Length: 382
Length: 192
Image (cartoon, rainbow over all chains, first blue to last red; front, side, top):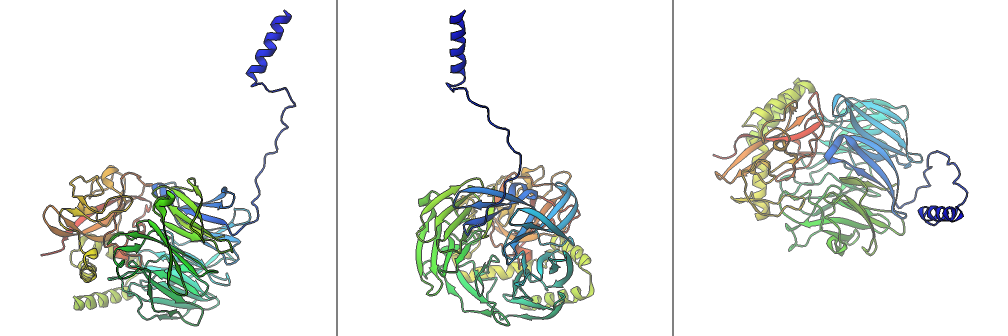
């Protein structure tokens, strides 16, 4: 009998993986993980979820730890922006009462970026521009007094919202010009089919005071401007289909449009082009422009970049060409760069849903994450 | 053509002053889906511009389909398979082919609604050597089909040229405005 007991004890020990009996684990406290303090190396990745568009998300990611910090729901064809103090993330979106059908509700939802909790909303008229994400689907005035939302019905206009009292203040007709490029406390510019910018100035209540058209600065027939402009300290930089760089200064009383310069040499023109969804990013401290470039012709303007070209914004000189295939990356559809002293470059791909993190100074790959959604078309800095 | 442009601009401004936005949507829908004449204006301008930019901007050569994104090669032999993204009518599409979702290249799947507004393209049919004006209508009121994601953007233009843009939800003016898939409907020949 003793022998049998000894064999039973031995068998139990083997079945237990050889572990020595110890105290059981203590009961756990169910709770919610607090969000750590943000760093310049966080990014908000806008996943437009193209295969299931009613279910877009914004994913918060820490590129230093490769950690997924949380998620913000973003509905259908969202536009996403951050408040000037970066403490609020505003998502302009649409929900249908019964999933893919039912009553349409257009809404701006506000999320506290220190907790990722929704803090409020403003219900919009059913006019919101349901378009692929850009920096200008919605945006705050520089003093956070107004929030502007682009409308397309298909008539073009924009809504003026009060983000504090959470009210729609009014609507400004933009005569066919689209999107909202806020600058200063009371100006909004929109891009026009005529190749100009329309600028509307508002009073303290959000009513139109004046409007003006800029000089013509691009030709939609020969070399259209991408609407995915890149915000800069002074204004905004736009790229064209054929690789022209149009810098617009919004720091004065009216927009100043500088003479364009080219990303491509005469031998590259027409063969190498910018393309993608968020096709470029600017590191403001270093004055560097990063652009996703590809070889292609007419119709290739949404094609992902096979190379990242790096330019000095002061001299317009190309500093580097980084072929992404050598890093085993898929063509790049969204580009972002952090604004700190040790900047990281973020490259998203929708053909192989992924976000790569590179050293923005050397182009060296640091990490590749394949769990940031199906179509990561826009990346925002915190 | 410039004279026609002026006439069109003048009539559009007059219309905008006389009508509400809701009636504008209805009229625009009729124009885009039913008219052959008015869509000629932007098409003609773009084709002239392409002729000026050289061979990269020229329309596709017969028997070839220009570059499509997402890994598709720059030149492929044409196909009559309407479930293939390479089918000639899909030259300016960016979305799910309704022919893979219960509809056909020009009809919506059962239970969906055809969008009342649309964008247009000009596609070359290699079978007869003609260019055709194509209306791209979304089929609406159900969630994304998800089949046959087709991504070609020939002569597609950014959002400010709305009638040539496919980055916006063209179900926007429908009662059920969720996007399901896209059809391509021949409006007529673009040439003589």
